[in-house]
Length: 337
Figure 1 (cartoon, rainbow, N blue to C red):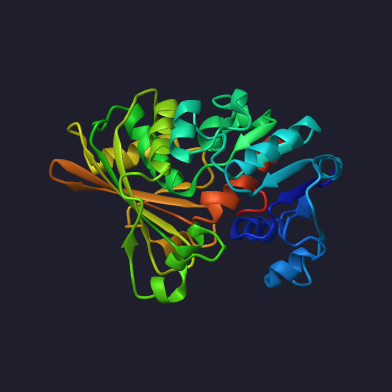
Figure 2 (tube, one colour; figure 1 turned 90 degrees about the horizontal axis):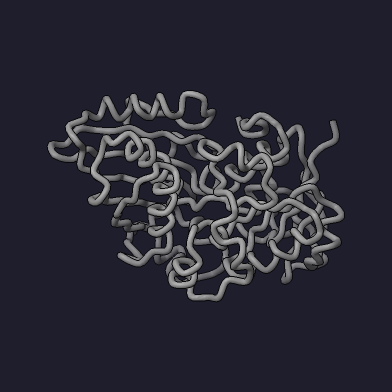
């Protein structure tokens, strides 16, 4: 069987590096094209020295038709706004796209434009692009031309919350999500807040009450569970390279933590990467992998849910490879286990 030919648009960032790294060990796919406006003429290995000797694909300026002609699927690792324009152009040339930005994740155009502050370049597709969580949307992903790759923080909240909301085990209007992320979640471009001297030996909250991933969490839990929720989401920056740990405080409806863990085990019984565990998850338990670990603890009127993922893997590039596998009829864990 011929290998899936993969292009990477926006090849300079951490998610692009992680896609390339994962594809190095994927038996059914290979990187054949990469684009960057700033690094035209170099190779992927020059931009990402850890790929030296393994992935010397040349970087070129993005021309949708040229890339589409080379590829079966394009991983679009561009920022919001710019990504939607590129996705639109690529789809016109008959290539499938997995979009890493938030441009197609939300159900509502109004919500997108409110939280992202831009006019959407392809508004007709808002609410008409499948969300890239095979655990819930595999059938739609398999035949999709565009897949909206999930946000990293949202993944760590949607996966534990959705089954519990759907089963009616928790209250839906009083959910507190406290999430902590490694610095790679802020991207590779230079910013004062992510300089070594700012982040080392420090932890800080940011975007309190107004982070863009809050609406994504509420929207997706509603779409999956069929019930609206109200959550308060607060992200924190921690001095580690990668990983997300979300601690979620919910009010139970007379159900124990053990019942919630069993609910997860029933829901994810056929899911390769989701593990409901008895121990307290930590980011090192899932570092560099596409796995999710989550557990629950009884705490009086509340239950505390704890979920750990790798923000660059299950929170971004690993999820994209998992989606690609579903799109092209391969086992979900191909190249990821």
